[in-house]
Picture 1 (cartoon, helix red, strand yellow):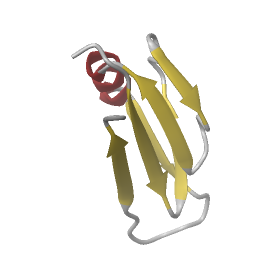
Picture 2: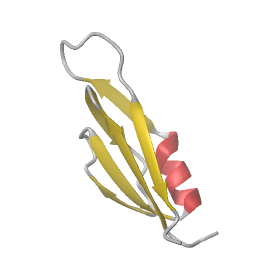
Picture 3: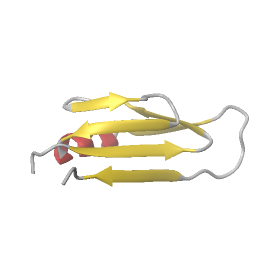
Length: 72
């Protein structure tokens, strides 16, 4: 639906950047922890352009933690 939801994204060894943030409230862009609030379609559009940049000099794996809240 059009009711707002929230999505939190976290990585341990880098930063996350969303280029298309139209229709979402965004905090933490270009950091290791990004929070989005908006409609499902606006969040999906924002996530479509998600970019991960590893910490300079870091070699190895990382994980992406995604937490959603439908506010219901």
